[in-house]
Amino acid sequence: MFKQFTASLALVLALALLTNTGVVAWQGAAAIKQPDTAATLNATDDVLKTVSRMRELEVKEPVKSAFKTRDEIEQSVIRDLDESTPLAEFDASQKTLFKLGLVPKGFQLRDYVVKLLREQVAGFYEPKTKEFYLAAWLPLGEQKKVMAHELVHALQDQHFNLRRFEKWPKGDSDAELAAHALVEGEATLVMILYDLEQQGLRGIDITKLGSLTERLLDNDAETSDPNYPVLSEAPRVLRENLQFPYVYGAGFTQAVLKNGAWRGLNDVYTTLPASTEQIMHPQKYLAHEMPVKIAMPDFAATLGKDWKRADEDVNGEFGYFVILSEFLPKFAARVAAQGWGGDRYGFYENKASGASLLVQYTTWDTPGDAREFFAAYSERTEQRYKLKHDTDNKVTRRVYETSEGLASLELRDQDVVMVEGAESREQLARLSERIWQSKKK
Image (cartoon, rainbow, N blue to C red; front, side, top):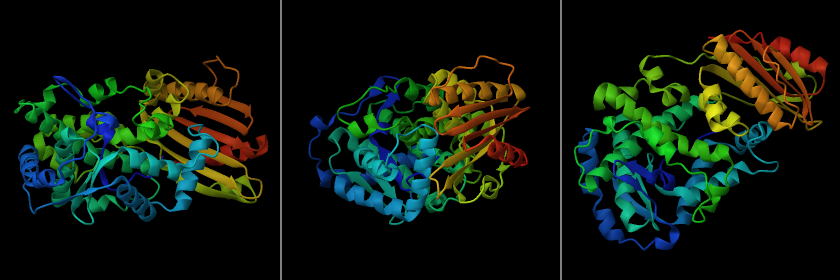
């Protein structure tokens, strides 16, 4: 739903790793001691050789390493954001998230992302300079795990060129998030192997430990952590999107590894995962089940004078899971988002009146999947706008009068179309007619 930070990161949250002996827990800020920088950086070559052996990728060149303070990391984050995501894109994403009910009114998305990454980044590899950086405040016991994670990124870069992910084509953030899940998921998986070996458990077959995603999700508590107030207070959409590449990516790479060993994982960098659905359900990637592409026209002229499209993108299965789970139980949201086939949304603004409108076209694997999603999104809409619950399961079209204009949902066979923010029934009728002319590829 919005752009990813393009440097390859190791986050505090990714250090809460499950092994067969339990949880490797991050120690709070009070436990942090100043690291022995020289000794730590001198260990780079040893850790690089170890992860190279584990990952079965040769080291093509040495990797430079250094420490960074929080302020230096923040400056790196800001520089990357400025290069990858213009302010106008952040503004459009922020307004789309508000329209979906995922962030509060007046929320400053870019500022919060900077604060969140400042708090959470434990290290990062920079493909432009071929260097990796450790957080200067990192606890001694965590340094080598972060080094292992970041040095996997260095190996990925040497063999598969990580810079190609920096200029992702606009308009498909779902596929971009899937690509990041491959990169971060692999680094997380190897970091788990490295940590197990450091505990004397060398030779563990990680494909036989059960789904890493399920283990990490089981350990994911949503309670507040006073050591990390920015993450604890972040809107769910930010927490979920930040965690996705690590939590779901680890399970995805584990499944690919089980299917084709490390050589099979190498091939994934040639044929990238095309959707978060493929990451969440690796068997769909392995079966080459591709997402349906929706070609949706620009509706600005249909809406009328002063309307302009400000944002256009793909939510994907994971995006709809997050949207639904804001208002429904997580289990129900997860079930309703499964069966996703493809989608596209457009966010529109009226510069004169300040009105905004969101159009979404979704397609599903079966008519049953579509009806299940239609019912769940109807409930979400009623919760979002505090409306009376409609219990008629035979309805295929609903129109709601909300404090932000008309909201409608329509089900046709395997497709569901949603509109939020229409100014009148006449405008809604014109728009609905045009939406159903969208093409599926």
